[in-house]
Image (cartoon, rainbow, N blue to C red; front, side, top):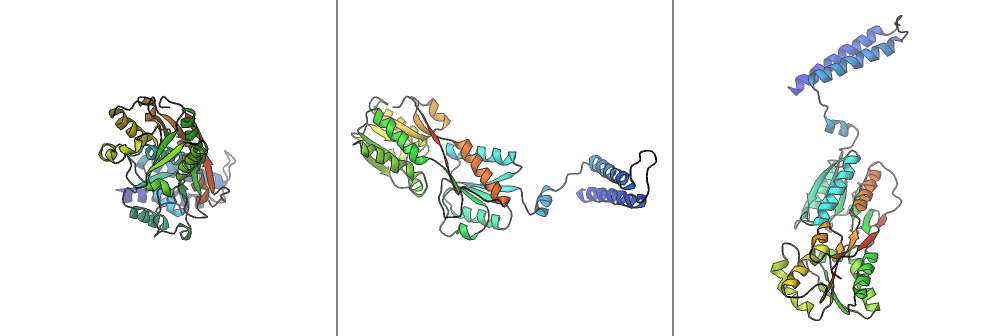
Length: 336
């Protein structure tokens, strides 16, 4: 059916083109238009009538390939069940759509080889670029790919743009909040994934500021398993002993929410007995009891800069800032 439709449109176009040739060299006495102008109008009228009559839809993929573009940009994230990643994907996709692009989504999960598959698709021109918020396996050398790639919150190598929050400032804000609340001994959770990204800067700076004010700091974790919505109740016993004599906690919003729930079950009152500061500024933290004090990442701005940068790379424009740092803000809740 589609072949017959295309054939009909081509037949109309060919007939109009032949008519255009036959009219060459003539002039309309009624309108004064040249033969070429009149023939062009006749040609386009006939083609448009055929397209409308047959409800013909052009092959967008074929058009993009003709211009050496697929019209797709890949988004790679670690875990879509995490609210931060969900929010990031939402804002990236909205920005891509506004700029005429569609997205292809890859959730890495526990299988880093999925990134390799995405990179291979990029090399085969299935996608025009990749925005990546996940760790890159050592088997992949992005510098040798020579295709548009933007990293979010991950440092890879020189020549690959990266957009991330001002995590050092975020660590300072969190430390100042707990110190102002009178904390003398604090803990923070850190995962193996956090240790590999720019996010670790917030914990380093947090610890520095606390120690400058004679506040004891203890790091918890270092592995891939820290309390979250799925694993919290199961692995909580591993960490509860770390809270003996502790009066302050700093960690990501999701982990903070789980810790608050578990601590409250143990009879520890927040913020009377323990002060808690989160990180990310996720919407759900407004509805916790007590409302979580948190450092907020500007996800819409991170998404916008990521999309703007990848499109500039696709268009062959120079990237002036290979590292772009987005401001964070502090939101006072009831947990400090």
